[in-house]
Each structure stands twice: as C-alpha cells, then as structure tokens.
Image (cartoon, rainbow, N blue to C red):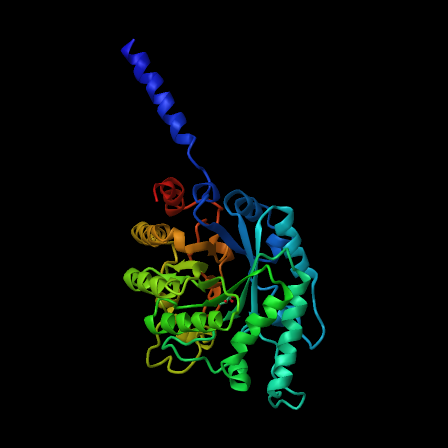
Length: 381
Ligand code: GLA
C-alpha cells in the first residue's frame, strides 16, 4: 500500500512538473515579449526547422536586414518591397508582434542617400527631404502592422559624444528629432525607439537619457530605448548594466534588449606582425594565418564542457538581471534563432572552422541548459 502511495505521488509530482510552461514565450507571459531576428530563409519558409523553433518559443520578430535603407531603397526613389512585405506578412500570418529595424542609421546606408551625383554632401534641406520621403514611405506602407520602429540606430559613441555620421555632419543633432517626427507622422500609433550598442557605458546612457528628455520636452513620441545586447562572457559588468537601465528608465521610458547574443570565443587581438592589417587580410595570408591559427580557431574540436558551463551560467545571470527588471522591459529580442544563424560566426571575418555559440538554441535546434533555466525559473520573478 505504502509503495502504491509513493508511486501515485511520483506520478502526480511529475504531471505537476510537466504542466509548467514548456516554451520561452509561455514562461515569459505577462513579463515581456520574447523576439528573434529572422533572415530571408526563415521569412520565406525555407528553414522549416528554424521556423518551428521560432513559432514554438517566440512571439515577436525583427528583420535582420530587409528593412535597412540600403536594402529597401538601394537607389533614390527605387523601393524594393518583396522581402520586407513577405517579412511583415509572415509575422501577421503567424500572430507575432512585428518590429521594424531601422530607419536612420549611418551603416548599411546606400551611398546616394547623403550625396549629390558629384559626390559632395547634399544640403541640409535636401537631406531632410530624403529622410522624410524614406521614413514616410516605409513606415506608411506598414502602418498598423509594424508595432514599433527603431527610429534612430547608433547615434552616440561610447564616450557619450555624437557620432560624426553623414546625418550629423549635415544636420547636427536635429536629424534625430526629425527622424522621430517623420516616423510619428507616418504612423501615429507605432511605438518609436532609440537603439544603440554598449548602452551599459555610463556616459552613453547619460547622453541617451538626455536625448530622451529633449525629445519628450519637444512633444515627440519615444516609447523605449533599445539596448543592443551584443555581449560576451566577460562583459558587460552587470552592476554597470543595472546602473545604465536605471539612468535611462528614470526618464520614464521603458527599455528593450534588442540584439541579444553572447559571444563565447575570446576577442581577437592584434600582435605586432598583424599591425594595421584587417583580420580578413591576415586570414588570407597562409603564413600569418598558420601562425595565429590557435587564436582564430581556439576550439577546433568544439566548445570544451567547462567553457560551455561557464557560458550557460553567464547567460543565466544576464537573464536573472533582465527578469528582475521585467517591469521596465518591453521586449527581449535574440539576434537570431539558433547559433548557425548568428552574424557573429563571420565577425570580424569568415574563418574556416571558427564557430560561435551565442544564442539560446544550438545548431541542432536544441535548447541549451540556460534556455531550460529561463523556462523553469521565469515564473519566480
Ligand atoms: C548592429 C545593427 C544590426 C546588425 C548588427 C550586426 O547592431 O543594429 O542590425 O547589423 O549590428 O549584425
């Protein structure tokens, strides 16, 4: 009889266990949205395994590239909608929150945008007209379907000063406010965000907080600041990150972790014989490459178990911090679904045998220990 009771208890306990959330989106329900950046294969349904992990675990998407200005308006007045339309349709069809990235950014910007035909800078008036046309056309097309936009990406440097982008060179700080104004005109219901990397740096967080206050004082809409989470095992310091969250949210806006991926490989460093050469040039030189092979491909047999454990516990600490701050966070967005999708595999250049490990699912589409940890622990916060 006693044995039967114990047996019944075990069955009930395991049923109770398996009735807890089994996916990221269920585990994070009521806290914040969980998104992933998706690529062309996923948008077009050609990566069926990737799509099935995406639809099972995530409730938001962001496009890796197809809404960037060089993709969407490669030549003046020539808009290429095919992939962007498919991206938005994919999200709506699958009941996902669809995000837009990004409207004003110095990188992946087509050459023509800030220039006259003779290569000189356009006038401030002409640049405003081009920005207005671009933002109105793109945001207007997806009005009511894209929930929120990264309006300006990466305008501030790590020391808190303004980046000398073509926009800044021609218009000064005003280009930021204009971008927010044009986006709001095109879709008054869309959420609008400022997005940047290394937001954990105090000087940067302070400049962005001031920017948010200035935009608000001018009556402009800004809903959140995106912290791009291109992090590593040793950075950022989590106390610094918490301080930056506090500095930014003291303005009254929320934050979101927009491009989360945690590097496992050590950062490449320059020795005297590398000098000013780009890493691509070093890799292309057989003698130099051989000399530095261990640095470029530190784990040819795969990630050692000890490092794997260290990485997982680092990701858990980051998630512990994000979960403790959940009331200040709108969304956490992974920069890719599984490790094989990550841009970090080819950063700073493509190197045979060098593989990154930055996301929540491995190359076989399996959840990692930290992913299970999130699913099992999110409800405790
Ligand atoms: C920045 C951009 C992203 C992406 C990453 C690297 O963080 O905001 O769109 O390009 O760089 O891939």
